[in-house]
Image (cartoon, each protein chain N blue to C red):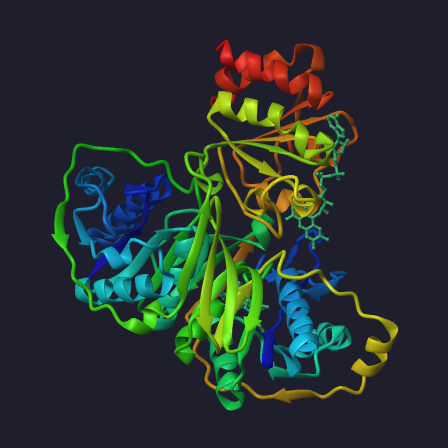
Length: 320
Length: 245
Ligand SMILES: Cc1cc2nc3c(=O)[nH]c(=O)nc-3n(C[C@H](O)[C@H](O)[C@H](O)COP(=O)(O)OP(=O)(O)OC[C@H]3O[C@@H](n4cnc5c(N)ncnc54)[C@H](O)[C@@H]3O)c2cc1C
Ligand SMILES: Cc1cc2nc3c(=O)[nH]c(=O)nc-3n(C[C@H](O)[C@H](O)[C@H](O)COP(=O)(O)OP(=O)(O)OC[C@H]3O[C@@H](n4cnc5c(N)ncnc54)[C@H](O)[C@@H]3O)c2cc1C
């Protein structure tokens, strides 16, 4: 028995959320008296693989086949399933992401595993195997028993604060059998903002809504985000109107995030918007309307005009 | 083009969640049930494709009779017929087994779902069904065009999107902006009453999970207001008090 962690690479480096998953997986292993193995797919730098050890994995399986450089959920699920069988892993841990979510769903089908998504705490293994997960987009929690032999835990960002140690992991090459049917879907084009901080990974997020009046005014939002090293996000109408790309849209029908800081500028705070951001640690609201509903869900608020307040905040950050 | 659309009946997005029975059940009293918003996107695109290419749209729900109003609304929006598997959908694997069983009987060209349910947020049923049927599954799909027996798909990824091509049949988890949500018109509502809604009994009873009880999140503390004239104070507080920057 062991705990297997699916660790994801982004441009050759382990994603921050994956380090969290590795650390979480190592804690699950400690709770269940086993060890944690990370599996990494695609070509990655050697020092990145070693990092998995510093976050708690005792072993790293590396499937470096170049065919796996592209994040292909079906092929990944086959490889992870093979690794889980080889390692006798009953628990598989991963950090939620657009790739990991699709991979986990296929894996659940392959292994006939119980999949708990949006897990927010370590499992309770005192009798059975119980996890706390967020449901109703953060509006409630469900304590869920995983009764199948195989269990998949998809953890939400900020579930655990990883601690880095000097520990090392043994790295083993893993040569899975790849089958053509897993490559039936052809990727014809990828468009991805490079260099930007990925929104689901970001610790700090500056978000803006219709109060910004038009896409030409986003400079003040981007300036503050840049000063803070934050990612930018937006409300649904803003992406519907094409002021901002769809992958920045947060909320009930958009991306769900749980950063340390969420700053909402010129966003009214509709319940569907809150659903995507309510598990942020600290929420700041800047709105010219003192009656804006968002203030009821905020930790800090400024009643003011974003066009005046944001540049001043940017300056204050730069002067820190 | 034969399309299956799988829909959930879920509490409206504006619902305030409350619990009953010693926190072991969600309180359904006074809750308005709607079609899952992502399922609505899937259905709208299915109806558009039918209008464009011909064919049929079948709606499928795994649920009890309280889901019938939602199913009728899907018929009013333009689905031709509906199937309800008569069972309480208490586990994603169980739900996927029911959907896969219906799909095996009827061989659809496209099986459209939402990217995730807005109640349990699993985001897994499409992947499990794909696996059970040996078909590719893709999610979250933002655009879908059909060219003969090939689907051209735009899928959202972190920080952008990717364009994909795959042969039919396929299982897809949909999200915006794949289509505009459709509102049923009077004619649709009238015709929905006579469209067939077949109720079938479930096959198998594999459940891999069980919810023991629920909890509501603690309320956030009071909001600390900072006068706009002292906006800079906010940055200081975020560093020294909240310690997030
Ligand atoms: C099924 C469903 C799903 C939905 N999903 C989502 C979702 O995922 N995400 C989402 O965001 N929405 C979602 N919505 C829409 C949601 O209900 C709101 O309509 C939306 O969030 C409002 O966006 P907004 O706050 O940017 O705009 P508005 O509600 O128009 O608010 C603009 C705010 O800006 C303030 N403002 C204006 N000028 C200034 C200024 N100069 N300085 C400071 N403040 C100013 C105003 O006081 C106002 O509060 C959904 C709706 C439905 C029905
Ligand atoms: C009383 C009750 C008890 C429950 N107990 C549990 C439990 O113990 N453990 C647990 O995991 N869940 C439980 N659920 C949730 C229920 O099992 C979910 O409907 C099921 O797990 C699928 O949800 P999901 O969030 O994983 O779906 P997702 O994978 O997020 O759904 C993706 C898409 O699949 C399709 N889909 C999903 N469900 C259905 C359906 N029922 N009919 C047709 N299409 C569908 C839709 O197109 C949807 O957009 C319970 C629900 C109820 C009402």
